[in-house]
Length: 212
Image 1 (cartoon, rainbow, N blue to C red):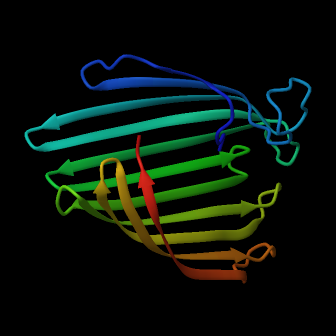
Image 2 (spheres, rainbow, N blue to C red):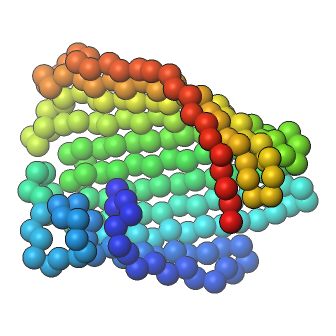
């Protein structure tokens, strides 16, 4: 992705719940820590993103859906094609104290020589005015191939989390979550799916959140 690289973004006014977003990223090469340099010869350049969002409400149900596409020039010389693209879509529905969200993203690096996919779902329940609990699941697949198209094997990762947030004062909340993650990296022999790196673990994190 383009990460937090400097960009120019325009949000159109909302019209009947719809909004268009257009963004241009001149340089996301990550080869230097300085600002855009037209002399950089490798990495990602000229990223153009377009997204459409629609929000609405019907009685006590509110919802939003969004989708977009990004294209970017690649000049790192590591793939056959000098252009890559990505797609994404998301949706959210809220009914009373319940909120359910889902997201999907796909990235084609070099027009299919390397394809990455991600999807995730989450649920949130507001117990009362002070306490909210949530659960989420996400899964990613990195489809590796040789330049000539020989299959290498997929790298797969998933994470599941559960969390709680409770307001303890004006603008101050306590938040904590527990998560389990697993990553499988496969070998580099064409046509095989031999696991060479399998990592999994469980973690807990918590802290105070201050909103101004």
